[in-house]
Amino acid sequence: MTNYTVYKDFFFMEFSDSKQFQVLQGFLFLLIYLVSLMGNLLIIMLVTVDQCLHTPMYFFLKNVSFLNVCFISVTVPKLILSSLSHRSAISFPGCVCQVLFMVSFDTSELFLLKAMLYDHMWPSVTHYTMTIMNRAVCVQTVAASWLFGSFLGALYSYGSFSLSFCGSRKVPQFFCDVPSLLKISCSMMHVTIDISVIFGLIYGFFSLVSIGFSYCYIFNTMLRMPLLQGKSKAFSTCMPHLIVVSIFSQVPLPI
Image 1 (tube, rainbow, N blue to C red):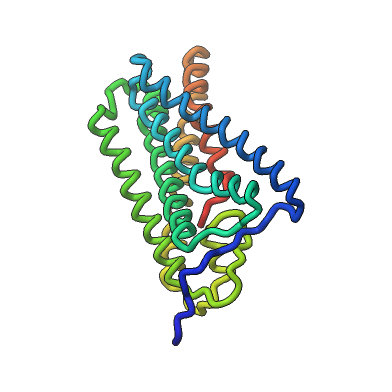
Image 2: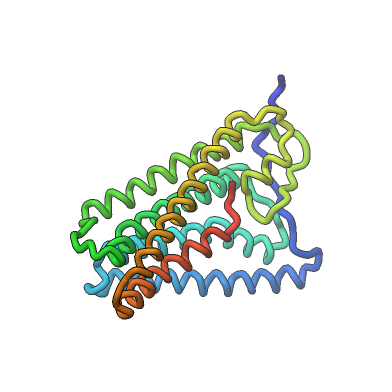
């Protein structure tokens, strides 16, 4: 069967046909992007400079902030440029890079969120005082998250762009993601990408379920604590991580 895939540009959806509104939305996204960028870079700088924050918990937090910077930088600058230039096209290599990096950063961040939970939350409620992670283990954990994220990103990008695109190149989204590419593909068989999606969904599902069960145990342990001060300390320790996980679970994944 002839493969109709050629290295042509893809085209994104537009928020509006009005050029004035596109410019307005471009500056609005630029403002949001800069605020998010500054917030995450501030966290990275504070954790790096302050010696009191050189703990495994904040080491992982710094890396999560770095991943956030990378994640938003994959799509938002292109969206801003498209709005200001009134040209919603993206090259074939650019679309490949968006899928590759978005999946990689998203997977790596979920990996680190689990590492933060098991390193910091469990000792806070079980009075387990032995250090679970030293610096070497922290570095190895971050490296493992990047390697696993890169593997899944490469798997998704290979599966997505091994498809044929013989019709419209109009992506029904504001960036390149797997579901949108599947919609415009004319390939009848999606074996590679189907396996990739199933693998990614299983990983994400069991990761979130394991975090959920861990918090059930944590809160159950907190309720049995005799001292109110201990409960308050454990609760204040867990809540920031729980909020981050809750926000993360609501973000639409690029898979």
